[in-house]
Length: 385
Image (cartoon, rainbow, N blue to C red; front, side, top):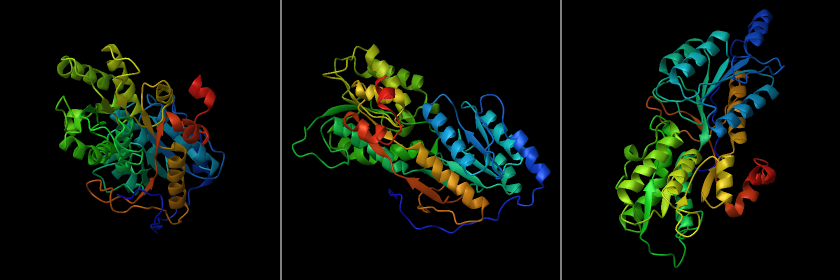
């Protein structure tokens, strides 16, 4: 697994698409690129063509930030943008992408809800010579995915595990063992992401690469016995589903007076549900409060880290991810080389998709200012407000 943003530039170009489109057609595209409802679509005011951007939902803070960043950066390069959110409804996302194709989109940037359900609409895109960039979530079971922009998600999973072990006093944040660390055992419960999201398995595999040896030697104990991905998975990354599962685990496994020492959570929204379940069960922040991981540096969870409720999150700078996806689209449409740094690890079941992977950072209370405030991602006022 490549965990750097360095690598060789791979020359994989396409012809400039729809370059002979008549001026009248371009005006028509500009008129129809505004989208509808709460899509946030807009007009870049430049001479570039229309690019469709499909995002999964506005129920997660991070996807709003992703959509805004992609749209803004595309418009800065002169493209027109049709940005749509499907509110985690697969038929809606399919319909939105179909409409983008009908409008004459010259490229598609897609963060899929379920990466296995887009084969037909992606074939329609291929038939119209429209390139497709999978955004953060790998689109599976289709040859019609040209590029993938994401983070090194196996490493993200490792970072989540390291953050849990750091909170238990076992390792440094980079995974280096701490001399004289406590022997344990520590009770830990495991949560995974949505089974229809390819990233979820990468997060899980990365985390278990770190945790499994400690489970095997008895340092960590999964008291519920739920150690398989299928048992830990949380459909649609739903915090309420995670809360209910945590409540069930506490009732069925910890009613004997034992306590949970740590919870592996792959996403901040799940972490907040887990925190609610623990609070309802009588746990209180302070002595005996479990170490809880997360991901995406959502504002509410950054506040929870400050308050001691959540131990850590993983910061994936969506501004940089948007920049990679936008540059990919611009390079394709301008007939230029497309930069990737991984051509081995992201097999979607039909092909290995050329990818560009970004680095992520662990955020704990002590480095919130350094990582999130100094980078301009959040302000002190937002975090402390």
